[in-house]
Every structure is written in C-alpha cells, then in structure tokens.
Length: 130
Image 1: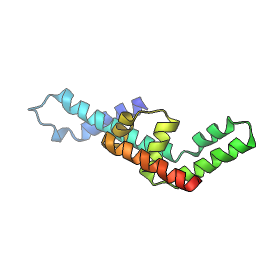
Image 2: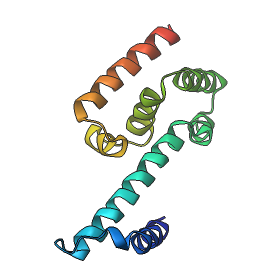
Image 3: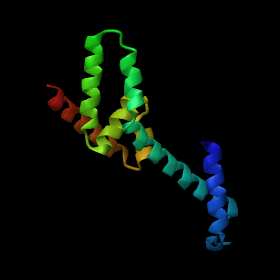
C-alpha cells in the first residue's frame, strides 16, 4: 500500500512537474502530492470497508450460537441499508475502532458532522431493528 502510494506520488510529480512553482520548496510540493494521494487512498479504503461483507462475516463467524449469528446478520442488513456516509461512520467507529477525529480525516468532513452522522445512523438502526 505505502509503496503504491509512493510510486503514484512520483509518477504524478513527474507528469505535473511543469506545474511546480520555484517560489516554494520542492519537498513541500512533493509532500502535498503524497498527502493527497494518501488521503484519497484512505477515503477509498473507507468506502470499501463500509461495504465489506467479509468483515461482517468474520464477526458473525466468531459467534457460536445461531441466535447471535442471526442478530449479527440482521444488524449487517440494517447497516447495509444506511446512507453511505452513515454506513462508513458505523463501520469505521464500531468495527475498525477509529476515533471520530480519525474518521473525520478519512472522510474529509468536520468532527461535528461525523458525530452527527453517527447519531443519525444509530437512530436509523434503532428504528429499523425495532
């Protein structure tokens, strides 16, 4: 992953070298490209995690009783029906254990928005599961 981001950074820098302004340090310009590439990768990974059936299957498979397995499947279906941004927040916070600040960085939204999305997502889940 890191190697891919680094390679993509240098390829982009090579093709965009004509946009470099010499009034800035080259390392700063290159670091900004690398930062953008890494953030884009994290955003893409967050979207993939939100829709990742394998993760939910692993959680459900650790539960020995059929009743608990049914509950986890029902929860997964309810999460799948959420809006994508709500689904991402639930997945990243509860399944990946990330903080609201980390999620805000990944999704490119303010921390307050992330907390609001989490609250609305939980409200939607309560409605659907009741």
